[in-house]
Amino acid sequence: MKKSNKIIGCALVFMSSFCCSAFAIIMEGTFSGITGEFINENMDVTPDAKFFHENQNQYQPVTGSFWYDTDLSGPAYNDYPSLDLAIYSQEYDWVHTTLVDAKGESLEITSRGKLPYFSKHPKDSIFVQRFDDGNTFYDSLSLSYGDFSPPPQDRVSGPFRTGGLQARSNTPILDGRGLVQNFELSSELNDNKPIGDAHFETRGVLNGVSYRGDFRVQLNEFEIHIRDSASVPEPSSLFLFLGALIFLLLRAGCLLPARD
Image (cartoon, rainbow, N blue to C red; front, side, top):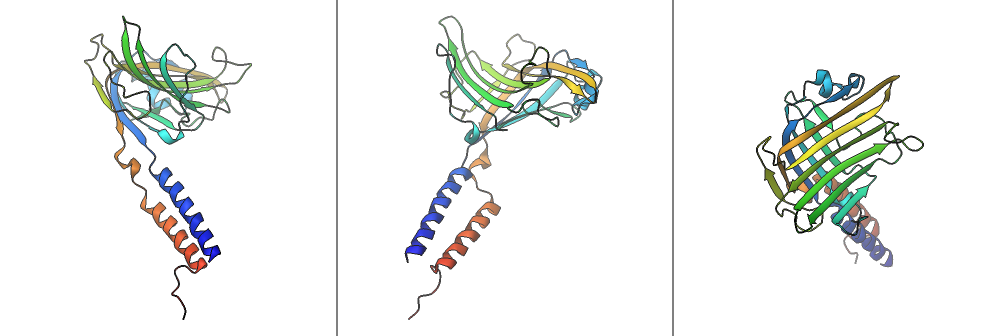
């Protein structure tokens, strides 16, 4: 009896941890805008060649999507006490932002893409900030990725890959300084009232060829919400768990009929 109670206890602990992970909150959203000038130096040698090909996406409309896992963000911190700011930064691959051009070619701007890491510790980060000094006010949500070669090389001389996405508003849009947010922004392109931007920049050497790519995107639409399916466990995961639980209970004799 003691053995069966111990097994059931372990199963319940496992079930509670399973449920917590199964109900993690995933945030997602979409955006659109128009690109600016491209810097394209031998980007045709990289896996991102199609997006940069002959600067065909320079001054062109683009769309994009993003998602991040709030369970992998780590605790919030603030290196700038004078600012109303929360920073979430981890080395896990927990922030994903994809840019798509009119032909359907995509570019990952907040992850390493198909290239090897430049450093051992690439970081995904999100910044949630409200600025108000009495004269200027804005709320901003920024997603970023940085992979820089370690010292003695640096961003000035060494290889790197970095990108980001920022939504910004002169009216309140943030619900606290957490990662769970829900808002929409829009504006007319080139109306001098940008609602945010996206950027991508990289430099390195591949197969003996030095390359560099750089561009920015002025946003005219941005929205973020909780992914509907984020709190629904996958059926396959449930079946695996239930199968293991039934096996444990059978081993313990908990599901066998009582003997006279």
